[in-house]
Length: 442
Image (cartoon, rainbow, N blue to C red; front, side, top):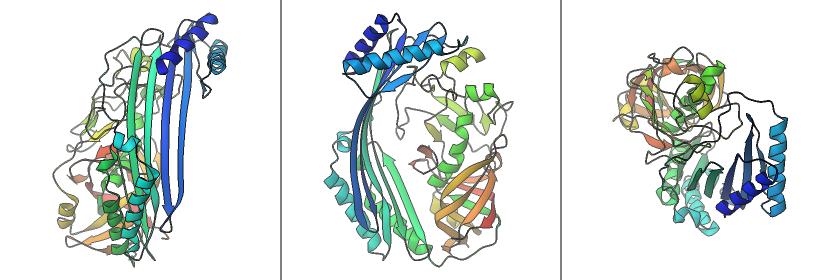
């Protein structure tokens, strides 16, 4: 289907005197079961296909997209893209279309996910609700199963495609004055255990009931992987050649410097077994494994083709669809873990705070990478090496360079899901001197 579509794109472009053209065909089926108040209240499914085309004409480019895939729809979107391109100003730095390259086929499509039925999702949700309701609590959340295909073609011979499935389960357990939360994702839905996640959420809600109010201040904090993901994940868009060239990255004048502790090493690795996504970027360039941070020192950043040419570097395969004002970013983050489990971190902590997750994270200082936000859905006091009860949630104000220089222990890395950024492979972290600025109202 996609090969045939592209041939029709090429024919439509040639009829208008254009020979250099790129096309992206994306197909997606999304199915979602949503529940609240201990009952399923929504089941939806959507299937869509889009065609996006980008010509290159004398240093100019633009993009047009349609979901009309008949002959007229293809001719119209090609004509629109060409018209927009000719209206654009010339970009002397715009690279020509990419040449073909060898791309590794990553297997991340599972029939168990693609063929999941509403009845199967409903059964799993019912069992998860039962685990929460059995604790006298109320459950809300989602269970989704998606299937997608992304194919990229251009008139220079690039022909790259990728198929993926993704399942996600998220649950919040609500008690009278507390709540708990758990979430996970996997390409193969058989790797998810909704009942186990529900029990985790219910346990957090139960154990954080009747929360105490502690004074704001600096505490030793144990951040579970979802909390690490949503906070540390805020900095990776800055590991970008375009962001550095634009002067909007905190890494400007800092590449090669030791910004974090020696126990912090970060990779971008599309081939990691717990990762998802294609082995090539939106220009058809193979994704290269990057060592972003090694023992606290910033080593490598991502480059799209244009940013690489301007910097005298090789492209790394992290470009976004052109044209864009972002350029590129590493999207397959792996933070190397350690060998200290969360329970061991707790046992080794005389007094501290255990944090399930963070939310409403906002940037305060982009160059110093200072962020504010709040804890939620399971915040606990640790005393004498034990979790002794729930505490009222805090607002925090922390700088990532300081925080990642104060990491005392790391758990093994796992695939983690949050709400503020994309999924990554990260460990839990024990951090000293985490700055809580005030207590929230809940």
